[in-house]
Every structure is written in C-alpha cells, then in structure tokens.
Image 1 (spheres, rainbow over the protein chains, first blue to last red):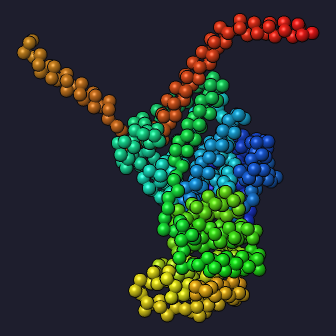
Image 2 (cartoon, rainbow over the protein chains, first blue to last red; image 1 turned 90 degrees about the horizontal axis):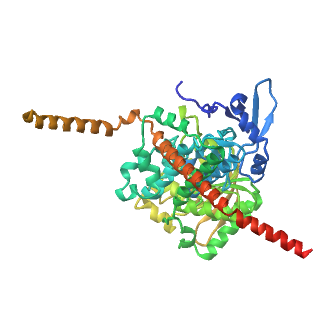
Image 3 (tube, rainbow over the protein chains, first blue to last red; image 1 turned 90 degrees about the vertical axis):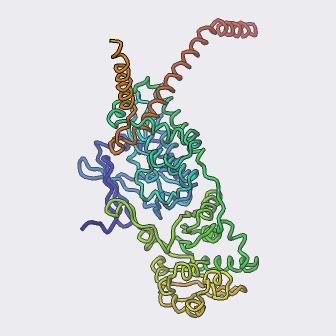
Length: 459
Length: 86
C-alpha cells in the first residue's frame, strides 16, 4: 500500500520521534542525541516558559534502560502554517527568535527553526518541538538554523507581502522557499532593496557548491564572548527583517461585513446575538467550532461563555481581523483560514505527516456554529442541504446553532443569480427536514428580517 | 616575429575571455546547494560583525588605558572628601 491512513510517527529528527495515540502525545527520545534538550526541559528557563504558556508542558515517563518517553498534553486543535493568518506567522516567528535568544545564555541553541515547531492555543503560539534544543558550540558565531528560518518564515512572509503569494501555498513547501524561487518575480528595484537584498539577491550571488560552503562554515571560529555577541547580532538582524515583513491589514469585501451588513438592522443584530448567547448558555459547550466565522463576532460570544473556540473562514482580511481581536482581548479564539467546502487536505510523506482538516476536527467539538453560511454552501458551493446537515453532524458531538437564510433574503437572491428554478423552492421546512435527520430542534427563533435561528441537539 | 604579434594577441584575448567565462560560470542549478547562499551571507556577516566587535572592544580598551589618571584622580578626590567629612 502506497499511502498510510493515519498520521505517521515523526521520523526526521535523530533525537526522537512523536506519535499521537488517541488523546496521548508521546515522544520517544534517543537519549544519546537528546542530552541537551533533556537538560533544558529540567531548567528554570523551561519551567518559566511553560508557565507563560509559550512552551508545551512535558512529563518524563519512566521506561526500560536507555529508553525515555516524554508525554505532552494534546493541544486542543492542531493547526498548520498554511491555515494561519499573516499575524499568526509573525507571532510564531517572534516566538522562535525569543526562544533561540533565551537559550544562547545557557550554552544552548535551536537546531531547527520552522513554523511546524509551533502550535496555537487561541492566539498564543506554543513551542512544541522540545527536542529542537541542542548544545551550542561556544566558539561558533553561526546559527545553523539561520537558513531554515529564512526559508520557512521570512521568504514566505516576504512573498506574501510584496508579491501577493498566499501563505496557504506553503503546504507544498515543507522546507519553505529558496531565494531562487522568488528571484524571477522581483523587479530590479526590489532586488537591491531590503529585505530582498539580504534574503534573495546576495544569497543567490553567493550560492556555491554545498560541500565548500559547509567546510568554510566549520572554519569560522571566534572567541566565545565574540561568538555570543555575533550570534545575538544575527538574531537581531533576523528580527529586523521580520518586522519589515509585518503585513499591512488589507481590506476585503468581508472584512467590514459585520458593520456594513445592510440586510441586518441594529435590532436584528441584537436579537441574533441574544439568541446565540442564550443558546450557548443553555448548551454550555466546552469546544466550539465557528464555521464561516468572518471577523469573529460570534466566536467571541462563545469564548465569553467559557468555550475554547476555533473559527474557520476563507476570507483572509476578516480572519486576520478576528485573529487581532482575539490577541487583543485574550479570549480563547483560534481563527484559521479554512474552508468546510474545500477542507485542507492531508499532506507530507505518504499523505500522513499532517492531517486533513476534517480528520482533525472529528469528535473535537461539542458545538458548531453555522451562522450566515448555509446559503453560501448551498448556492455558491452547490452542496445539497442533506449533505450540509450530514457534515454538521460529523463535526459536532452534541450541539449546533444554525441560521437559515430564506429565498427572499437579499443575500440569497444575490447568490442565486438566475437559478431560481433550482433553489427558489427551498424554504425553512426543507432546511428543518434535512437537519432533523440528525438533530432535534431545541430552540427556534425567527428574526424580523426573515432569517431563522435554530439550536439543535444531536440525535 | 612582428607578423605573428597580432594573431598571438588575438589568441591570448580569446583564452583570457574563456578563462573569464569559466570563472563566472554558474554550476547547473540541480547541483548547487541552495542553502549555501544563505550560509555564505551569514558567514560573511558574522566575520564582519566579529571583526567590528573586536575593533570596538580594542578602542574601548584604548580609551580606558588613557583615562585611568582621571579615574584615579576621582577616586582620590572621593576618598579625600570622604575623609574630610569624617
């Protein structure tokens, strides 16, 4: 069989491997390659980082001689860089540089630097690949993961900011972009201006035979205090490049949707918000998935009711705004760029290194919000009502809050685009019939604008 | 001999051009380590920064060497004034 059906045990790091079994996350360690990482995990620095929520918690499990297993808590909803907003990328890059800088003092360093070492709890990045910590050669001023940091963080962010390449396309680039990937798309002006001068043009000019470069780097030796100062300077230079790549917030047709929704009067909005709040108070969910979260108005209502929330939306500007709000408010909301109609596929070796979106979501949420989305799935994606109801049932273990948009609604009419014969007959009864195959309707409320809200409980 | 001078010069120019071209030739991309460019930038930057760091500390040391009389004077002054205050 050429492909595996489940996530593989990781296999690239000689220091150890990680496997997820049910809710247990176990890391097998090869102590001869992980001596320094283990020393780090027992240090005050690691304890401080765990307390701050920036490093994953680790428990040492006793095992037979020469075998060591570490156990980590499962991060509620693992996400991948190709689902993150630009600000989430920035935040993950900052965390990587912060950790590397903090390690230098203790004679340690990060041996790799990729966004895949980081997961998110809400908008808080958490460093999870604890075996990335290694001993630092006190006389070497070089950070061996420098190139990887540039390839996997800085070049994707630069390509996004200056060339408009979507960050989601990094799903096809496990080790990021090479300078040569970007070079043909830069104008002469861009090539000689920062950040591209240091990240693309000079590296391309200096590209040589690999073994020669490795030999040269091994010869670079400096006095320990000089090497430390130079390493710090290299990290500062990377941070300066990173700050240059801070993306501007762009507007899109969805980014100010909540404020500009002319089909919703202030009263309608108030009534909808009250219904959602009351439904969440009745259901008391712990883990909420907000489908079509937009800028996160209802994600935050759910978070204020005490739930951990993951929001999926396809619009980058709206999701970015949701992320910034979540960060500012400190609420447990993780906004991701994800589409239930075209979910993120599994990726990597044998399609089994990173899991597909729906596989990760299965059984994780006890409540799903589907507000203002059903007509998009029905009319734009052409998904039948029965299919939508079936997906909803697969995504929630118990509750769902759904908004039905009737055929007379201006947004329904916009999307029908002359296909009234196909969709004009669909009404609340058709929607309720599809949902009631999987759910019981617990609450129902019709808004003055004709939209209908349901609280559903899984059968 | 004179009549061979021109062809010899022309031949030398061609050889020179070929040597120049060979020196500037980039190896086929597939056999180049793409990471080597970023490594070279880091090596160059680090050596330069290391050099500047050493230079800076030497200059500082030089200033410190020339400043001790002032420092010792200040120390003396301080101790003298503190003794006066007793």
